[in-house]
Image (cartoon, rainbow, N blue to C red; front, side, top):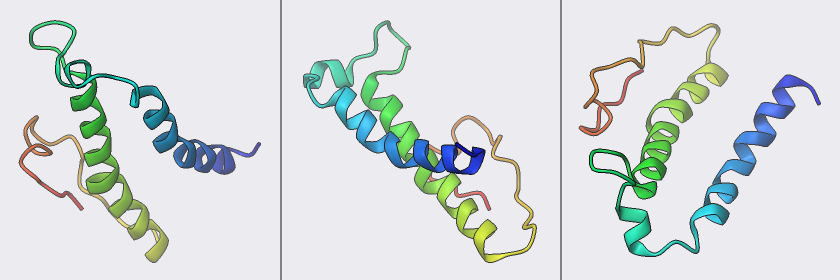
Length: 88
């Protein structure tokens, strides 16, 4: 499989894979981290969703629409995503 095809296949399969891995978990399993201060499964899934929706998808759209678009760093301060920042 070519690298581009492999990436697209992985991206396409990821939502269903996450659903398969989490659909049988109880609310407490989704909401409670393994240790104090560690992320829960639900927080990790939310983080992945926000990253895909707010960072990766807009960038992919810009790449399709333009010739060599420039992007600001996604290495923003640690609360940027939580606060709803949407880098370009």
